[in-house]
Structures are given as structure tokens and as C-alpha cells.
Amino acid sequence: MLEYAETHQENMGRYGRENFNFWIELVDTLDNYTKDLAPEIIEMEKDHYKNKKPFGEFYNITAPTAEIERINRDLRRLARSIKQAERIQATR
Image (cartoon, rainbow, N blue to C red):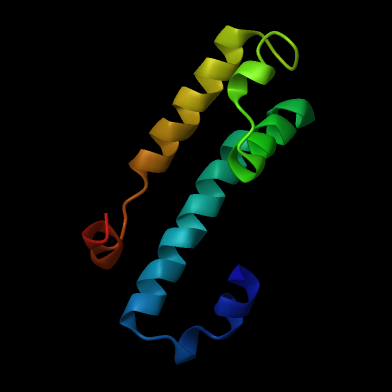
């Protein structure tokens, strides 16, 4: 989706550009963080958020509980640190 939007930026309105910039920053920020994570941790996060699998099923199996909790805190902190467009904030 981002690749398509990137090639069609001139056709975007103001809100489209704001959303595009938000998504680019989000993807860049999270990709920079996750590039150093083990593949098992990334799969665990995908299972949790896509398939609604509880983190409790992964504790001390995929990684120590404290590490999973630290990673989740870091991811939430990173997501909150990204400035959202005015229109996105209004829908919260």
C-alpha cells in the first residue's frame, strides 16, 4: 500500500498526505526497532495482534516473561511517540 501511495502522492489531498507521512514514520520507527529482535519474537507479536493469541501462551517459551513485557512496553512507547495528524487524533 505504501509503495502505491508513494508513486501517487501528487494525486493525494491534504489528508492523504498527512496519513501517508504518518504511516511512513510509523513503519520506519517500528522497523528500526524490530530489526534487532529475534524472528521468534516477531512471529509472537504477529500471532498476538493478528490472531488474538494471548501473550501468556508465549511466556517462558518464546522468551522470558520479563523480556516479552519489556518489548511490549517499548513498542507501545514508540507507537505513542509518533506524532499523529490532526484528523487522526480527532477520531480517537
